View (tube, one colour):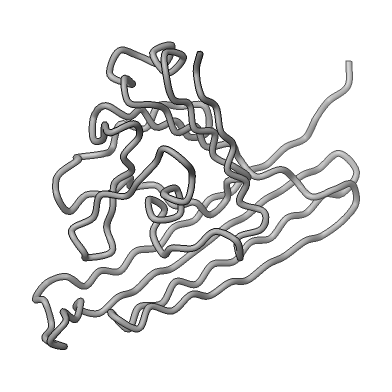
Amino acid sequence: VANFTKLNWTNRAEISGLSLSQKLAGVAGISNLSTGTGIGKPVIRGLSGNRIAVFAQGTRIENQQWGDEHGLGLDENGYEQVEIIKGPASLLYGSDALGGVLYFSDALYAKGNSLEGTFGSEYNSNTNGWRNTGASKLSKNCFHWNAFGGYTTHEDYRDGNHDAVPNSRFHTGDFKTSLGYPVKN
């Protein structure tokens, strides 16, 4: 019997953590493996790295280098939910998915004839780090359009003695868009 969990992103206030892996660690059976620099990797049923398959937009994501300082390489912005598949059913996604599968489902379009927008910001005092995100969704008749963007910046990490850890700073940005026009036959 496989375990199947859906983590819905719609109420992000209930999901704590700055990194995607930290947010996933809130689900039973998943933990976060981190070196303390804000980069983390999910651990499912005790397995991590290349034993976890990641899918986004229906495509297997193969950009993980799984070194100490390489995370998922995927931003949660623009996804409605992540489906976490644990147990024997995960092997349907490949023999290297022995630990499990993270399947990210795209955000839904706005409801008919409406415009939706959001903006969010998170702060991390340990690295003087900021994460700013924004989203815009438009639905007009049969036309649907989504746009998501985010920018993250962190200074060097400060240890317990308040000393900077050299070269632990990072900056990253992302942009995702989708367009839909359903045609009735």
